[in-house]
Image 1: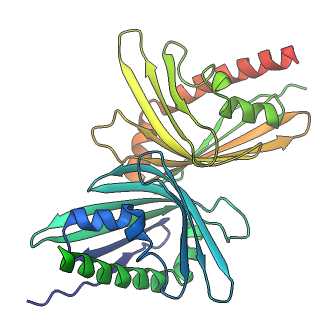
Image 2: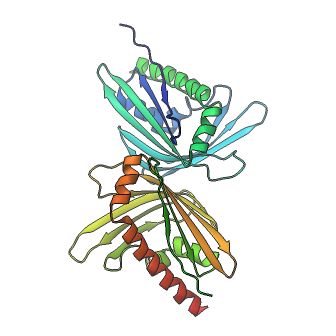
Length: 166
Length: 166
């Protein structure tokens, strides 16, 4: 049986939500760990050619996080947020902001749901709620999908490596 | 000149946002303080006949908050969230969750903008972004507006008392 893991992105016109769904060939506990363990997180989040500087990562209820992605040409992209809820192994709710926007305040509310599937597989559903339709559409028009797919590909490889070690 | 401070609530059909605007007879710094100083916050937030137990209130970027409103009959209503951004005296962005729902996860992203008006007055614009239209409409159908107006009335009284002491 061949399982093809496509990423499904849903963004209804006029709404302020993006939903991304993706299945992974790894048990739910392991996928959840990749999202919440600092040592694993830095191995897949962000583009390959950028250096990830994870400055804060308190993956628990009420914790804060912050990282800076550094490009070879010296460019820096900073992101920050707070964890509202981290309930292993099923749900993470947090805020997210890219600090490189012209003004602050373009914050999103991000919910990730981890669903166990038969055969030690996992479906992750990631919902981003924006403050406005304009913010949502701006994100869709950016390079978001490409960056996301590169991160997911890195995560797939990391999960395979971790499972090979088990 | 008589200034009538009405509360304006906007909730467009089919959207997942509630916007509440209200003007106060106090300078912006003082109004902002009432939202972020624990000693002041407990004096106006929530209904008069409930006791406010503010268990955590880290009103700064990355801080967490939690309080329990206690009714005379023993009923308790718990709320929690995290502060994404606290920029005095102009903006607060935080999450909000009522922990008395049948399931967790009904979180909102709350943005409060404090605008200085002539004559030492202040306009506060509070935007609540819900995860879904259903969540938003459920909040509208609850007793939200009455509870909010009672809190605002208490805030008006508190601000008048503070200004009288100046």
